[in-house]
Image (cartoon, rainbow, N blue to C red; front, side, top):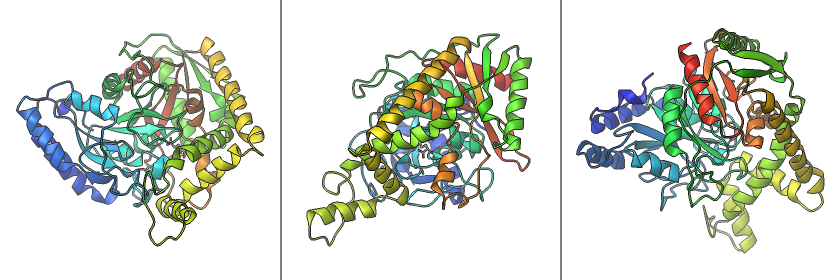
Length: 456
Ligand code: GLN
């Protein structure tokens, strides 16, 4: 797979034309919803003329289509925003452009980022880069697949409960979900504001580190951003690493466990100390997540009423009908399911029993992580319980689909940095990723560890 360095100091126009050709040649994966060809070529010529320079001069990339970006509509893979032309760009995109990077297209996702397979896209699923009968993972499935297929050397995604890490794992690339607040969310369609993060896909940890270094930092347009703490760093030797044994039970696919154990063996060989840790509360994280996230979703999606924002239905005779029909037509089934669950858990009769309870449990989860990090530098486990599952395999059963998130949601609820690194393959040749989780603001340390393991 290519690296960012392979594109630097080449003709930017050539880089863009070749990336667009690869995208068109690999059209059958349906990883992209649109190309931003005209604008990309304009920017490429400006780079070639020396008018734009920087650490990513002339490097093509792709953004998930829930990032506001110029050159193509921002749809969030939904009918609700079909054809929506953005009046501004996301801060993350602006920062990459300021370094000379060139966005060539917008990647497919589960509509409004609700899902773990990209099958909830209103425009059809993305196929796995290694096996076209399998899902890409999600919700940032398109971004993972364009990186894995080498259409571009890196892509942006958002991760609310695993949407970068899980598809990264399913497609054999590095996926970074930073500490909550590391990268501005300004200009990214909101899903669940208390866990939404912006991160990236890359073919190795060094490239991911460069992208995070560029994107990280305080943004006056996003109150939740932290002052920049991200500082690329060297690997620390003799780390204390905890293998979360609750993620290595018999319910977990045997190949996934084997690949994880092999990675642990390599960590030990590299001089790190790895021991089993118990995290019994982790098994409840999924229940917390699927209360808290729908609650925030129902609130964030309230703005799409067909009047202020989004698709407006025709042929209606009352205001209530206008709201109802616009939302019915604009949202996919999974969006509606989350709005209903969210409205329910926030309703006056059930708020205490569900929402409040989930928030209390979330505090216990956060405390448990903090306690473990008093003793361990890093926690490790599989990124997902299985390799990529079949297209259509989990669509009839939402709970089965949600279970695929069981290993990624704990770090999201606690706001911790977590990255998925390619660690091996299943017997049938599907990629398997391992997840590294660290204390808040240890993002650069995790990437340093990942880098050292790529060469170990
Ligand atoms: N699969 C998870 C969900 O459906 C994660 C989604 C995300 O991170 N955007 O909520």
